[in-house]
Structure formats: structure tokens, C-alpha cells
Image 1 (cartoon, one colour):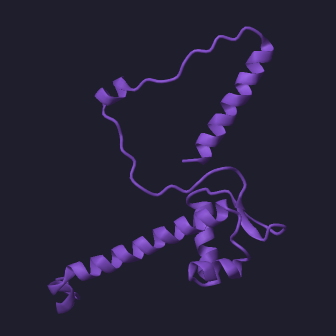
Image 2 (image 1 turned 45 degrees about the vertical axis):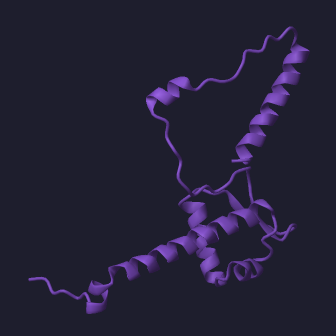
Image 3 (image 1 turned 90 degrees about the vertical axis):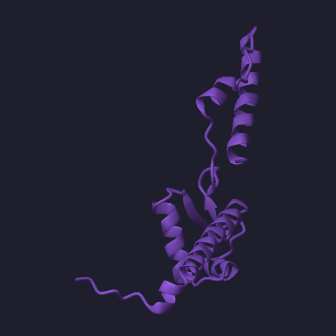
Length: 141
């Protein structure tokens, strides 16, 4: 026989608890977004300053950074010269909804163009510009 430990207030208003949980999740996600932005801008400051900016304790900051490093594999390190946390490679933490295209819409997707290369000099120029555009695109997501 199971004992019901639910209180009358929980049974009468289950939306209240869910709203509190949703608000906690919303705050957590916003804090990660704010941390990501500060890291990308290389202006986090010291751990103490960063914790103050995020309105959390230093202990919680270290736990949050560990989650990002371990669970999300974010290449975060502290740069003493800049006095800021930085990403070791270009990137961004994305949290949100991504729409998937169904097969009919995928068939309509087209793009790109063929480039004829007359000599190696032109190829190197095109290659440099091409990779520069990909780099900007990847960090601009």
C-alpha cells in the first residue's frame, strides 16, 4: 500500500508547482545564455565578478562551468591575461527549437554554384574567401 504524501495544496493547485519549475528552468536557460554571451565577448571578468554578474555564488558558477565543459563539451578556459573566460575555438551555446523540414520541403532546397578554376592562383583566392565565409557563418549561428 502506497502512502500519499501529496498535500492538499499541491493537489488543489498543480499548476503552481509546474509554473515554479518552469520559471526555474527559464532562469537557468537565461543564465546559460548570458554566460555564453559574456564568454564570447571575452568580458566575464574574474570568477567572483562573473558570479556577481549572473547573481549566483562562485560555487554555483564553478558547477555551471563544469556542466558546460563536461555535459555540453564547451571548450571553456580562463585566460588570465584577459581576465575572462574564453572559448578555445569559435562557437556558441544554442538552446532552443529547431524546425525539421519534411521530405517534400527538402526536395525543394537548392543552392550553391559551380566555380570553374582556370589556374592555381585563382583557386587559392577562391578557397581563402570560401573558408572565410564558412567561418563567419559557423560563429554567427
